Length: 311
Image (tube, rainbow, N blue to C red; front, top):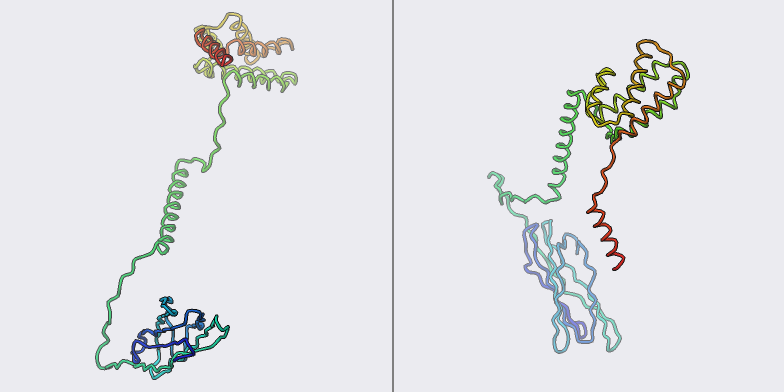
């Protein structure tokens, strides 16, 4: 159909289809060089019983005196009968004259047939069932489920093993153990502040004092002082490089402790304090001393310092 100097036409690939088949509705437009075309709004339903499946892209060809536009619409029908394909309106704007005009495509008829079915014959499969590959989105939830099941199984096994071994489910991380001398001095100071002997508990005081020292002997010199008598401890300590004064102090404390625990001796307040201070002196005099740096290391450090200053 011609509208002034612009024209639009529409054709069908065929005017007869079986129900549900898809065909093309081909649109072609010719416009002058200075004319702008406005395409109609295309909806899913072009007309009653006529459905638009897909709208193709607009192809443009530039000519000497204007433009040729073409576009293919895929349409179908899901009812049987004879249906009208409506005329589509297009608006044009002429930039030379400033006028706007409309042109429409030619109306057409589409015949839709229903396939004849012989009900006496068994139903046959038209096409084989196609296998569609699984997508990652479909598989991913199953992967998460499998991981979750494995985690649950792991914790069940872990729980059963803990119960069989009579171990607690959760344990605190042990704190780093203090050096023997630091731990002994700490406990001796705590015993001093407790003022046990001042309240008349002499046996408890000397038992606590010797227990602290037995633990120190065991950790410092690596022998089981906890299961030894005082004489056995003193005999073993003689095999280590301990000065006579320190050994004499700890001997006096151990002997006094034995008298209190086994002979019910009653030391004086001065003797009680002296026993504790003797233990403190022994620990301080026998604790490990860091080895001094050798002369080569000191010389290298001094040399490095001088070089840094010179730099």
